[in-house]
Amino acid sequence: MRPSSPSSLLATTGSPAFLVTDLTNIRYLTGLQISAGAVLVTSRRTLLFVDARYKEIAESGVRAGVTVRDVSDLAKMMMSIPVCGFESEDVTVERQSHWKKKYPSTKFVPKPGIVAAFRRQKEPGELSAIRKAEKITREILRRVPAALRRTTTEEKLSKQIQIWALELGADGMAFDPIVAFGSNTSRPHHTPTHRSLKPGHLVQIDIGAKVNGYCSDASEVFFTAKPTELQKTVYTALKEAQNAAIQLLTEGVTTHQLDAAARGVLKKSNLEEYFTHALGHGVGLEIHEGVTLSGKARKETLLRNEVVAIEPGVYLEGKFGMRLETIAIVR
Image (cartoon, rainbow, N blue to C red; front, top):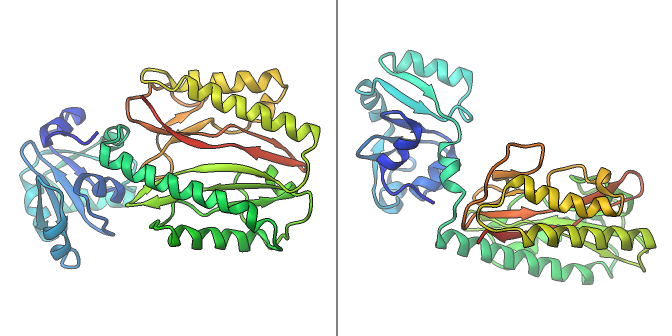
């Protein structure tokens, strides 16, 4: 949830000022999508520094409470700031070295993950955009079976999915569509190829539309023939694993608890060793943001109105793979 004031953001940094350079975080704080600029947060003000390309756009469309300044004014401001936190996860060594030379009177202190922590809890407008993106994503998936009744390739279907997204009102895709036929489905992040669909192929689709900058994420499995007993077993186990995690999805549950719940279901069917990635991740302005739902990642407690993707998968190398994914809002 967005900081209520500049001072509330600074309180999390322990610094008298904070410089934001990550473009997604700039969008979050200002409401503007730009390709260059910086936000400086002081105890009393949030200042957006842009060049002439964005001046008019910024002055007319910036979020309330944000002051727009020319980028040339940033050097003057920094002269009066002895200590300034910065987004160390976004800043290169070269850029930090440049700052030290350009702003010699300012000590820069690395403060990773500050704005990302605020972004975890979604506001009503953010949730509305994500729901619209998810609705479009589900409509695209609804159209897939009809497309599979015609001659097609992984690449052709991927392109068709992108066309559908635009036709349905999306900004575009949150990430390049994953479309896999047959044995290619055993590769979790398969890149579509010229492979043609053949009768009996298992089809894995992983897509997400984007609306007003906010992402959705969904994965579905489609059968082009009667599934084998092994395929039935895997699909049923994945559905049960996904449901087990979703049932626990309340404020206060930990990322490790969710991961363990899903893996426990797969273990009963002797499939746990074939689940080779995290159970899921946070979703928002970026397709992967916030928490990682994995027993191997840092243990974190989920927050109310956080949006996460739940995506258990099983991958049998050289044979097939399946992944079922949906996004859910923490209540």
